[in-house]
Amino acid sequence: MATLKPGSMLLGTTRPAELRDWYVKALAPESTGEGAIDLGGFLLVIDERDDVEAENGQPGRAIVNFHVDDFDAVEAQLNAAGVKWISIEERPKGRFGTFADPDGNYLQIIEWKKGA
Image 1 (cartoon, rainbow, N blue to C red):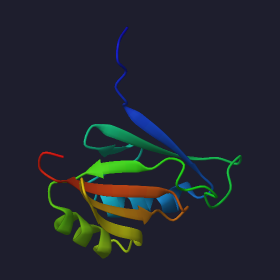
Image 2 (image 1 turned 180 degrees about the vertical axis):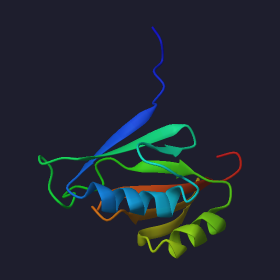
Image 3 (image 1 turned 120 degrees about the vertical axis):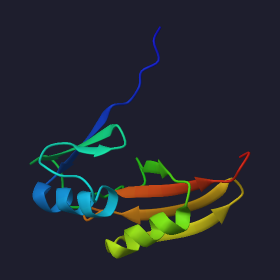
Image 4 (image 1 turned 30 degrees about the vertical axis):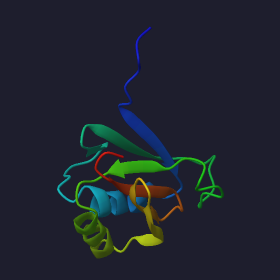
């Protein structure tokens, strides 16, 4: 059997233009054009849906993690984009920063400790 490799994620929202603008500003400031947002080879597709609430009622159920080499630099980029931080923690395996998008979905940046 083949191991599947994730290629994209569909994010349903009631306000696609606002959410797309936020994701470009926060995570892909060099992104241009319409359509899927390329996050290093993983595509984020944002689509208007009428079967979802305006805010995610269970944001911790699924969290997209971004592994980073320089936590401080990425934290500064996200601060400049005005993200809402949920927590920033030093853990035994690394440094974790959890933040929310405008719909309340959680995302994390993680800088793993060497050898963790």
